[in-house]
Amino acid sequence: MTEPVDIAATLATLPVLHGRDETTEEQADAAFAQLGTLGNAGVFAGSFSGRSPWERHANGDELVHILAGATTLTIMTDTGPVAHDMTAGMLIVVPQGAWHRFDAPDEVTVLTATPQPTDHTFADDPRTED
Image (cartoon, rainbow, N blue to C red; front, side, top):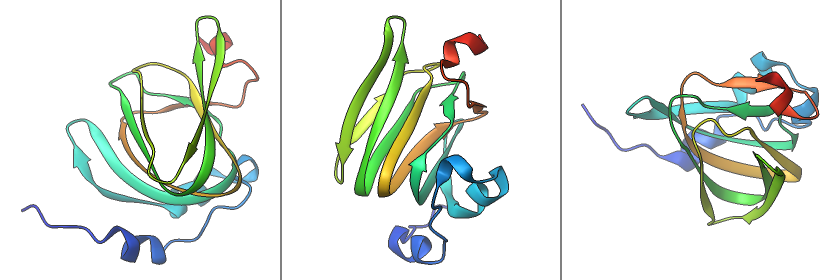
């Protein structure tokens, strides 16, 4: 049965992930709640600061909505990285298979519809992972 989700109440129960680039996957998993599913995607929300690893999703586009704070979302294209400065209320769709990462020096809260599975890398240029 479909039930509404109180995003703010759910976020209030989660730790903020500070220093995303220095945390373990277990810490990252604990800082994000899965709110539901949408096709082959999980709908997630969480708050963090720092730089995330590069990630990509082979099975679909990813929807990213900034709920609070600010981040730079960098998407790697064939010609190199393209940075998008995003603040609360903004939304972007990351194309299927595109490497991307978040850089939030302060705190950002995101809601995503993320196709599974997700590939991660800390390589300087994730295109070398292909």
